[in-house]
Amino acid sequence: MLKTHIGDKSSPCKMHKKTFVTNAEETSHTRTHTKDKRFSCEVCGKTFKTKPDATIHMRRTHTGEKPFSCKCCDKAFPTKAELKLHVRTHTGEKPYACKVCGKAFTTNTGIKSHMRTHTGEKPFSCEVCGKAFATSSTAIRHMRRIHTGEKRFSCKTCGKTFVTNSEVTSHMRTHTKENRYLCEVCDEALTTSTELKSHMRTHTGNKPYSCKVCGKAFTTSSNAMKHMRRIHIGDKRFNCEVCGKTFVTNAEVTSHMRTHTKEKPYSCEVCNKAFNHKSSVTIHMLKTHIGDKSSPCKMHEKTCVTNAEETPHTRTHRKDKRFSCEVCGKTFTNKSDATIHMRRTHTGEKPFSCKCCDKAFPTNTELKSHVRTHTGEKPYACKVCGKAFTHESVVAMHIRREHTGGKPFSCNGCNKMFATSTHSKIHMRTHTGEKPYACDVCGKAFASITMLKSHMRTHTGEKPFSCEVCGKAFATSSTAIRHMRRIHTGEKRFSCKTCGKTFVTNAEVTSHMRIHTKETPYSCEECGKTFTKQSLAVKHMRRIHSGE
View 1 (cartoon, rainbow, N blue to C red):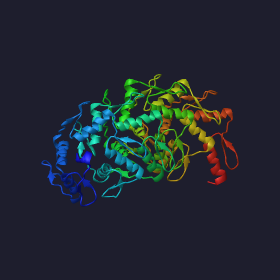
View 2 (view 1 turned 90 degrees about the vertical axis):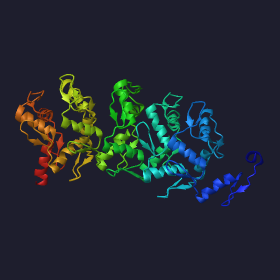
View 3 (view 1 turned 120 degrees about the horizontal axis):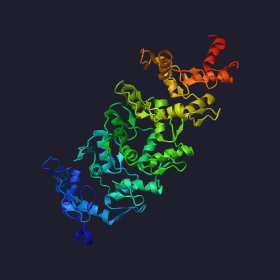
């Protein structure tokens, strides 16, 4: 009667002008000023200002009692207030509307937090670093994640710990396989309403969050924030405790830590193969067990397992290179290529190390390939002759060179044909003069990373390839193979089509053919004299012009 009809609030707070209907309300409110916490938990001793707060704490933390259940879905809650809020998810009721933009909310707390997006008010600050937040819950999460590392909520199924109870609820759906939120467009099931909202934007194309610096738009606020930190301010506030590497987000640290712990928390339900990331399990399932390639390329018959794969592939046709290197500006069709370029060319970072010899690599794929040099594993075999190889791409090259003679890639400068696009690109650099790989020791530059690696061994003295017969060591595998054929087997599998002379390597055939064609592709930069071999041009330069 007093609250609703008469409006009499006769008990004013002595600290400020706020008034209350009853003395009990005024007394309870006063404790927020006096810090009086007279009600304590019988189990853990934690104190509270009011008895209801102590009761709710007991239910949530210790007894798990949830006496209030929903009639629509039978979900239960520890308090009646939480039940009322939950019921609105069924009725769709949102009684609190923003007077500025009209957006509606289910709770008064929600409207208050939202209003701060208009006013810019951030009344809650971190006691350690002073960072300000719009809500108290965000300030508490910040304190736990950044400063204390406290994770008081744990999963009863697997024991994994979390900062907030809501994270536990979301995580539990990975065990129950519960997907409560269904997309009305494509029927994809999502575990949280936030995920559903973000997913819907893939259909609508809506990008409501934009960068204040460059104006680039994003589907989520977190992506806009990550863009700001990565591109404009370079803020990497999260660091790995093992190696010290810094990251833009805590999620990236968690993912990176698996390179140290070797943890693979996600497994395939069919074959139990373990993976670092949940997305890797999905792709594995599609590629290995289902075999569904539902994203066909519109340019030809190639199909991709996921839309994520289809998009970078499509860019190879459109020449769309939207990912650029922050150092040199070179552009790439997908983000992973840009990351690998950064590691190989600029930072030299090699986060993947071999357990057998401690050699490190910039990508996990290169590490896997390297490990086969220790295990001797050759999982890819030629269907024609049965010869086994460590890489699938090497099998394709072998078939073209030895069996079909196919060279589908041609040079635009001289029409020379190649078995692979990589060899074609490297060859093109003989025309353009491009040498993107430079030696850190002497500064000499090379057209390919393979050439640079071989060159680096002239400084380190490393000779990782040895002859199986006499044990002689070599800096490159090709030199070891040539040695084996010349000294031990006498094998000369490559022959000249003009005169029939045989050679150990195909490169020797190419060089020999210039005797017949009179081709002299290498010239002296000083006098213009031409030669059949690059080595002859170098010797000429040293003897005649340099005086060496």
